[in-house]
Length: 319
Figure: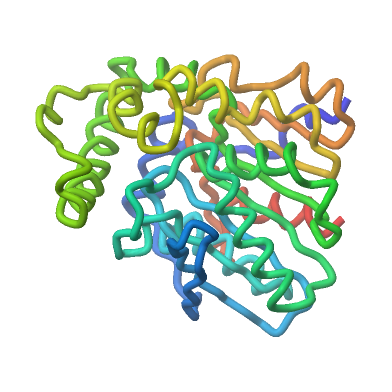
């Protein structure tokens, strides 16, 4: 069974709590030493994606996928890009539609199951440069997209060698219920506020197609997804979206080594987001469940300035 137990992660003193692990890096971690070169590519539906490259001239590449309302400049993306560069890897951090600082052109934006956009990035890389190896690294929503993509397409991509995903809400329905709990109110308010900015950007570009009347009545992801995510992306409703976009049902099809790391004390994850049965039945799916780590946390203090998640990802992809 590909289950790493116990995990090698041990949090620093006073940093073991899930909320501390989640909040501290987002507010206080600063990562220096990463320089991006931006490239804009077109999508098949005449939209665009902005890709940020941090290259060393290597023949190995890691494609990084950020989380909900993130972008290529989040500390967890910058930290991973720096760790990759230090070890002789190129890094490509792609921004989901509307997350690069400029609204995208179409009425749709991004969602947890949008593997077609990740595929557009991978296909562009394959056409642009010949890498001996490509790996995928995803965080939270980006981890769900990564694992779903592997379950859909990995047998057909020769250069794709491995993947790592952190803090993944494998079961979106259960995750939406978990996020609606009182203990997660501070996160929900923040996400709904930044998502509101994106809706307003859409309104300025397409006032006849979208509005935010009554937006302040939205208090949960399910309400947001029922009103916006589902209809804008071809789903019947939030439940249909959660059912089709959750990566959990695709884990059995993963055919390359993939490491999933979900912390036991992640405040965003429901029990069904820890796919023990799927890991037991798929020799390519490696599951690691640290007792601590929070959501995209895994704090570490060391002279290199690297978090445990970065060192763990390097250890897995370089085997």
